[in-house]
Amino acid sequence: MTENPSYAIRDNVAKHRFEADLGDGSLGLIEYQLRDGKIIYTHTEVPTAHEGRGIGTALIRFALRSAREHELQVVPVCPFIAAYIEKHAEEQDLLDPAYRRVLGLD
Image (cartoon, rainbow, N blue to C red; front, side, top):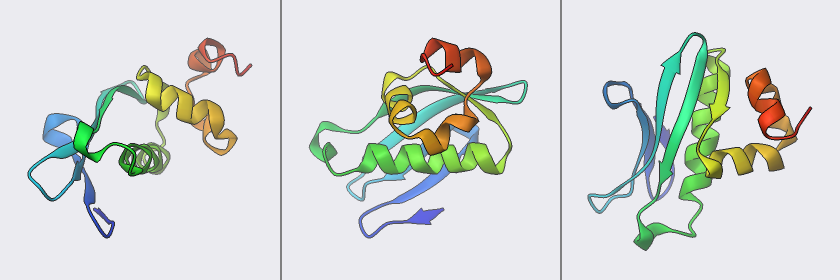
């Protein structure tokens, strides 16, 4: 679990998602699926009341760090995560080769 002054992020393995506890009963999250050495990020969600505070970015960083630690290739089906990876060359080595082409990074 990673601590932030306003929330904690964890991997909820049972629900296949990373969760940011926002302290008011709501969660920011990234949903994922695991398949054959890959992690497929399918959806990112931050409640409207919490948008613009960097929660989505913190979730992405946590999720990508987890992929790196577990030696998983990343398939960013979620457009928010795909856009983040496109802008951050230091994370692009995590991409599944087919998705590098989809994102125009080859």
